[in-house]
Amino acid sequence: MIKKTIITVFSLLLFFPILVCAQEDINLQPNNDRVFKAKVIQVIEEKIIERENGSEALQQDLRLLGLEKEWKNKEFEHKGISEIDVASANTYKVGDKVLVSEVKNIDGVIDYYVIDLVRSGYLFWLALIFATVTIIIGKKKGIKSLISLMVSFFVIIKFIVPKIISGSSPLFVGVLGALIILAIIIYLTEGWNRKSHIAVVSVFLSLVATFILSWIFTHLTRLTGLAQEETTFLLSANNGAIDFRGLLLTGILIGTIGVLDDVVVGQVESVRQIRKANPHLTNVQVYKAVYEVGNSHLGAIVNTLFLTYTGASLPLLLLFYFNPMGVISFTQVINNEIIATEIVRALVGSIGVALSMPISTFLATIWLRNNRNI
Image (spheres, rainbow, N blue to C red):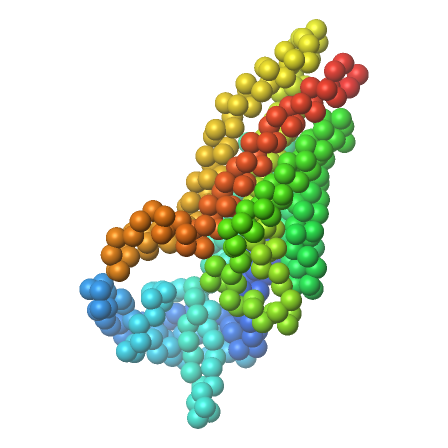
């Protein structure tokens, strides 16, 4: 078992750096020839500036040593001290690895700007810890869950994202992609059996319900899908062919599928175990017993989903709280499209999860009726 664990961990080690580096290349290196890694070898000068609101910011001039490409082993300077305050600017110390952009201005002079800290190494170690803990605690199930995670990532990156970019309907792609992800996860972790078949059908029906509700309420609330800042960078992508409202609905579905998997598989397994413990119980008795189990679990699941979306919007909520224009009402806050979007995400997702509980319990109660099926 220990040998298998070691082999699996090292296999994951080969996989995770690829994901991290790929993500880094996508997000941070739009022009790969002009962006490179460097190391801070000296903090030349530091200056603290005071903002209009009374807070302070630290600016730095740095000496850097190139680590790759034509800049390798070459020294150059980053001039970070200026009159311009960059709110998101990081501070660095000697030994830090950073991403640097080489920019040629209109006079032909080349300047170097530190974009951000290189975090891939730390992410790699975090991924290693995550994989190791999952395998040690979950054993064979843990290994299967990690493989499922990789498959999910692959489907999103290689199917859902390219299809949306190519102009396909985000709604169709989202529903199909979400169903594919959950089907693979369920069959991989639970095996090819009646229990898995019931779980997949339950997930499909729950996704359909979630899709219908999200479509209705995004239209009723007239959400455009353009509230998030990052969507502005996609306005001109693919000649403006991306359907942002559909993209929003796809995000709601993908955000819900992980919780659906937990609820549905748990309910089906509960029915199976109760049938095995007492095969003489009627369908009604089994349904009521398992429904009570799911009911106690549902509150925690829905609360988790809601808090996840709330946590993602916390900075925005703080911004409303400190609104310099004066106190604003609760109605004004929720009428903002960004907040309304998160409310629709949380509530529609929670409704989909809640519906999955009676759906999966009913189907499992009907289809797992004797020892042969169990």
